[in-house]
Figure (tube, rainbow, N blue to C red):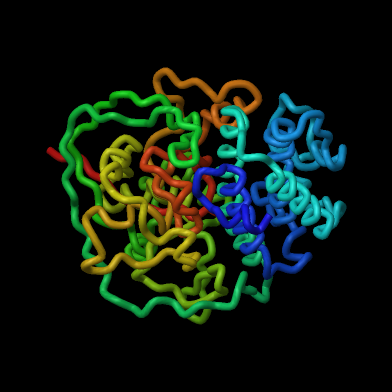
Length: 426
């Protein structure tokens, strides 16, 4: 199994999936059993559940294609670890995943090992449908790698000891932030979206498809992300106390939840601190602001005399840039400042934080969900969500594309979400 897994992202989808699953295990290697079982809120799942669910996904959608007459390892697991696939039967309630003290973490890890063994034993002569299922399972696992880290961050932040996920790395030395400039973008018809791909190197989710033409008006994008220092100026100018800056639903949340700062900011002795996966430390004004809801991002943009970009504007700007930046492989696990001389404008298109757009998450013209049993993956969520683009410091590089559409409800703050400004041109 080790030899096969070492092939990584070559041409063998089983080996590639095994390599990604090994990375998931490494991300969880330093956690205690207690870290892995607690659910701090309805939207954040326990690490143990993520480890089991990604294995259930493979067992459900891949294993029957690899082994004729395959039977589930434990007949109780489909009920416990199905996420939202209604067509596959009833499932345990999402808000009560933290009640699953059994099966134990050791049993879940054994479940993962048995699924890995099945993948390692599979032959190289796979039919097209099996290859597609394996590649989808790989990208599904990568999505849960990011969720494991964001959910753990939220969990550890609830602990008054403010523990770190790992031994703290020293932050980068302070440097002058690249000035915010406006990068003008010409208007016109743009090709948006992608053709459906199922291979290791051309995969796309159904919500990225099909390619289509969209008109983009002349506009300008900010050359970098909004920083903590810039967002602090919004706060000090009464941003959280000025209803005219907010959408109605956002203002209601500010009042009901008593929001005064982004998630994970805390005042102590007149100084602002921020919780990170490396533990709590002083807020750095040069870093991109993170953990904002759509409402906060939109209110800040209005205060700044700008707006959020549309997803078409973002994609047309990002299409010519390499998938590079502060991503999971950089191992920073936190946004980094954009510094002078760090590349072509706009900076930070990929990595650091997911960028809210002003675009509602809706189907593209001619959209068709994945055929058959995968059809519930994306399409049924195309309501009451907003699109985010660009990935974050917790996103694997091989998971991203310029056409990738992430989505969350506008109130969500526990994900690595931030702001890039846009404005209209006369």
